[in-house]
Image 1 (cartoon, rainbow, N blue to C red):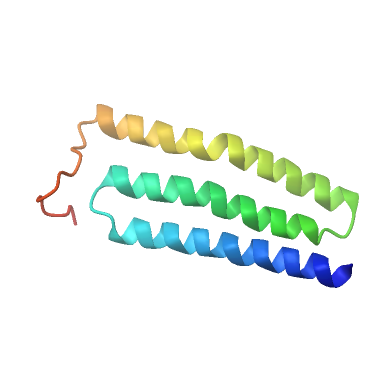
Image 2 (tube, rainbow, N blue to C red):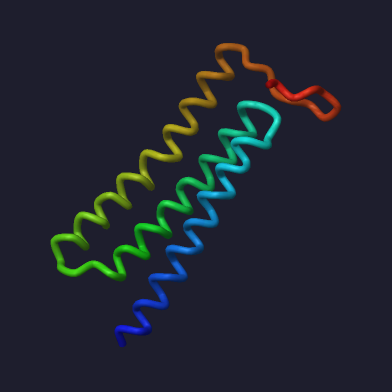
Length: 106
């Protein structure tokens, strides 16, 4: 049973790491603020959630498991909200969306 839990945990941690890395690449490669924030917002929530679930599988006691679940719930509620608030603030400040054919805003 321990080997099965180790495999499940490793798969969750690896998959979560891939999500976080792809979000970082999106942050570096996408052309404007809105596409960058979308890439990071989506992959951050999914990647961190999978990583926390992978850690939850390996939790040594109930105290640690409850703390991990609370962290997961906090991240699920605050991550998308923060991304939305940042995008709305950028829109209100007049940040222009990128259109096909434009240069990137570096």
